[in-house]
Amino acid sequence: MPLGISVVNRIRSDVRNQALSQAEVVASSANDAVVPPQLAKLDGLVKTNAESVKGRVMIVNTRGLVIADSAGPGRTGADYSTRPEIALAIHGIPKQTERYSKTLKRNILATAVPILHFGKTVGAVRISQATSAVDDSVNRAVMVLIAIGLLVLSLGLLAGWLIADQLARPMRRLEETAQKVYAGDLAARAEIEGPREQRTLAASFNNMIDRLTQMLQGQRDFVADASHELRTPIASLRLQLEEIVYITKSDEVQGQADKATAAVNRINSTIDELLYLSRLAERTSAAERVDLDEYVVGLVERWQVNAGAAGLSIELRPPSGRSDHFCLCAPDDLDRVLDALIENSVAYAASGGVIEVGAVAGGVDILDRGPGLEKGEEDQVFGRFKRGSAGRGRREGTGLGLAIARELIGTWNGKVTLENRADGTQGALASVRVPDGVVPEEVASDEPTLEGTVD
Image 1: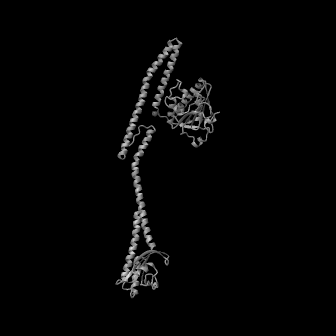
Image 2: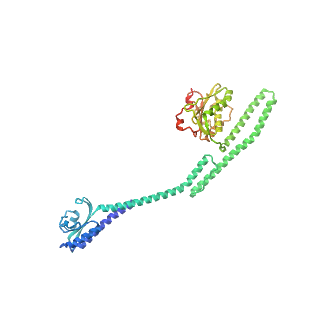
Image 3: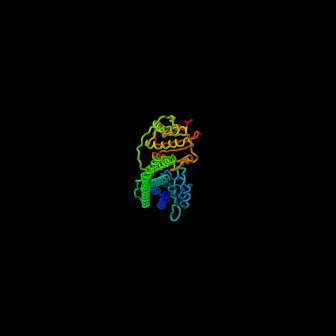
């Protein structure tokens, strides 16, 4: 913008200076031909200079009457004394002005200078030029500057984008590597590239992942070794307890031995589940399209005996809304998750109660008539070795079933929740959802959940 303003001012100044210089040249050439007027010389003079300045050149006497005009001899004798620039010039004062010409009906640049002969003013020269020509020159210069500015700006943006891309590319690759690590790929490493700060960051990131991998592997090895070391004495202890039960005749001793055997079994189950949790990140399972409507039928049949032994009945709820429910995950993983939830319902439901199981869009709902949850326990019960208020006095179970269920379903981007029933009756609602199911989300959102169909 400063350059544009400078160029515009320079063009206008050059035009003004050129017109003023040309007028002075004409005045100097005509000073001895005005009095008396030598018309032939003056006519040739104005015509020649009019072509060079691309304007109109006229010569007037001291009364402002035209004695020579590049516009043609027909203008001779016309009175121009009322023109402000000529009125000043015939009194010896040069004048240059931009004004609107009523005769031409456009803006003109008028330049008038006195004609001096031996120091005496004998007439004046006026050069008039249309400002449109000057404006065209200014506009052309401005357009050229705009084009140059846009070109420079485009080149600058392109260079800036290339430089920024070169600087950001290592950071994007580092982000991609971090996403892979977050997804469980601990073998991913960042490429050491870019400026020194980025290379240092990538090296630190790799060192962190190396350290994290070593810690996780050490944790897994510790759990595996501890499990292995504990299995032998626990198995020996179980055999000794069985031998005591076999050889003793005392009911009291047998009762105590049975309690000890139950404790040993619980310890063994805890070890098995801790070992499973430690290896959860390493396991790989193929995803399958599971027909949930057929799946829940087999699930209910599988738990009929155990539920009946606890004095409970387990029933299949008819599907609500749509009858085609699917999800995408490993069936074995879904078995373990739902078995943990139903086992939890069987353990806490009151004798004579009913456990209801039904397929919904992208998952399964399980409702029971147990004690339910206290406020704030909905998420707490999924912690390792955490129990709700209803299970704190119970010795059965390891306290790891729900934790395994949440982590296992999480590997399929799924979600498991446990909350009180929303229909106002006592009991809990356990829900499993796998959002990567094939049922469209817009269809699933319009379908009522199982909870809405319970009487």
